[in-house]
Image (tube, rainbow, N blue to C red; front, side, top):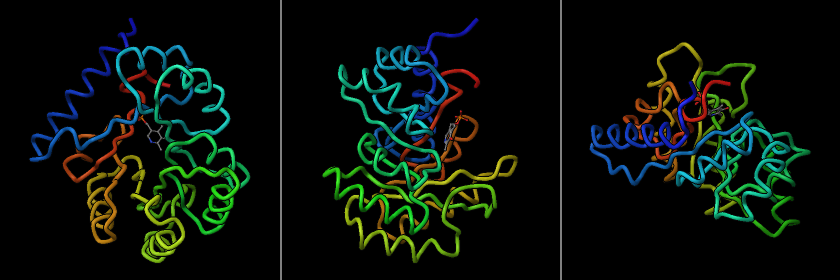
Length: 220
Ligand SMILES: *Cc1c(COP(=O)(O)O)cnc(C)c1O
């Protein structure tokens, strides 16, 4: 019943390319982050065998457990895309190639300290709570400009972009457009937005990274 991951991946890559072309963009400018949270290492290995190299995980512990062995064998890029506690910042900096969820000054402090201790600097994205949802992580819209400026000063070129997860059940496009516009205004090249249900709309609005989980690995 379940489709081989190589097939679902190929289909998603085709849809990404088609969405890019329809938007007058180069498909090469869009990176597929395969979100493997809750899925076993075997599923990740299948995706790697099919050529996928960029993965997203929500939790630091799960990422460590799943990717330690696989990363010894392949050049992978591991993105942390879940809300990050300050007490996990050090391990996050140690293992992540990108942290997409920098969203508050206290976390910026913790990441800055961790970078100094670990001597390695992941790529950093600021997550914005574009829908102002109280239960969600992300810096508030109104605080975004100030926080982006502050993080640019602190992290320099390691800060490359913005990320958002629009409210479920709403048209995501106003959120996507707002985020892409904010990135342009701040001279940030990376715009991480769009998931299984809306990555094509995100590409039309300017996404450069799309984070797709269930459409590749099956429902969770
Ligand atoms: C789980 C998750 C995704 C992937 O969601 P799907 O709907 O399975 O594609 C993307 N981004 C974040 C932040 C997530 O937590």
